[in-house]
View 1: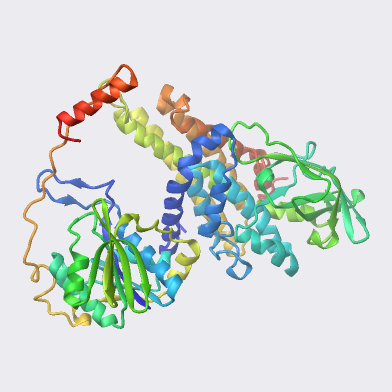
View 2: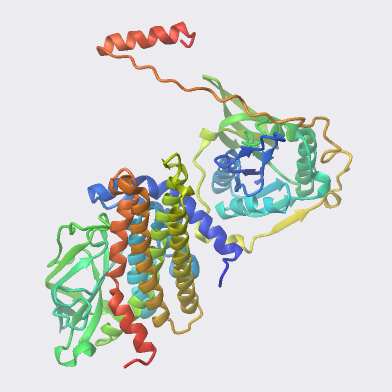
Length: 261
Length: 379
């Protein structure tokens, strides 16, 4: 089985600040990390490989430093890394990104399963996985909290609020996974050592045979005009005293009054 | 060797992530309760950290010495106890078997140790043989196909949880240090008992115990190296162990600095954060400079060992300086925290207690000075 897992290098969320003048993310000096939900996707890919055999290819689109996210994926145990890096890919929205990722999937070829994190913590759109499936014309399952593969079909549990929906799709298919699907493993020393010798490819728009009118800013019908920080919420503490039963009633009344229950 | 390469940076990042997520949350609790963190040992085994510098074909991870000291430092930043569990196991138990063991000993003991299925310990110190390790009173007498071991060992790290022990004993008292031999002992041998852990100032969860040997029958094939070569084996093992302890000391110091920087940037006195005061700035600058210098000494010693160059004096310098730095830095960190630093609400008091022993074990600072001046030709 060939699994393609798509990963993104994102700013460390503990470290992110907005520039108060421009409203843009301040990226200088901000540490980067593998998007946490993509680590779940990598973990799921490796578990499926352990069960069914095959190859796991990690793919990322971004500037050269995005190779760090791919190296993390290799250190966790992925077999091959593909960095899609070209100035023509810069400024892409989810449509242009999905076009580029789909071109890479086609070039790698023979894939059975595409795995994505549900969303990236920086853009938070949750569109790239589904859009890539649409570009490739393959079935998609979003919000998966379990993934099982059998006889050319993939079966997933989908988390929908308080309900779980069980669906199946014919392979090849694309899945986006939730955070509670698994606990991502660490990059182990032995895999980090091996990762140094694993295949790492960097592909440009030309390598992909991509139409640059469809990539990057040119291929993006949407653009970010402005980023604003949501107003800070004032926290306040209310103490309900007295007997436990009275305090519980007072708390319930207060929550009800605020339409919270 | 002033900058880590990509591979080392990736290893470091992984060790840091593991230490922050799995080790740091337990540090306070195990210090207070003196509970040996066996679950962390299992996690380190799953991660493949229990045989880092052991070649893959012998069951280890095949990481070089620099990679190994990075692991010890990252663990020590958040929990010095956990770092010495790893370091004693790796440097003092796995290493001598790798270096001096027979193929059979490597297969039987090193492979499961490096895989983390078994935990190792090293037993040289006795009540009257501390810095003067030549004064071994434990004896091992050959009797047919086994040695009969009698005596005791004190201050043995990992003891209550360990499965495999490197133990030194006199096989020929007439020969002095050339009469000392090394043995591999398994836990559970008849007559081999382990006391309750010592109640220590720092590293309170590292299970430091006394070992007692009462006519313990040790199979002849468990002699490590040749008879009479035990002292050399012990000294060679401690050379490497000192690099581990030096890395631990650097980690403790850096951990204290990291905590202090966070604290001074938010603690307000006289209407401003205390980070704005020059005393704070200069103190932290000194702390970081010394710690960086110590780290470079550690890397130099580790690189020399990796390259097969003489490193006894380099290990001694690294340990001497790193240990003194750890004590200085943690002491200053407590001072920057003021009264809060003296409480158990913040980790710097623990770090200060943990730092002290790096000046004492695996060769005191005074021993390191003897080694260094001896290497300099000072007689």
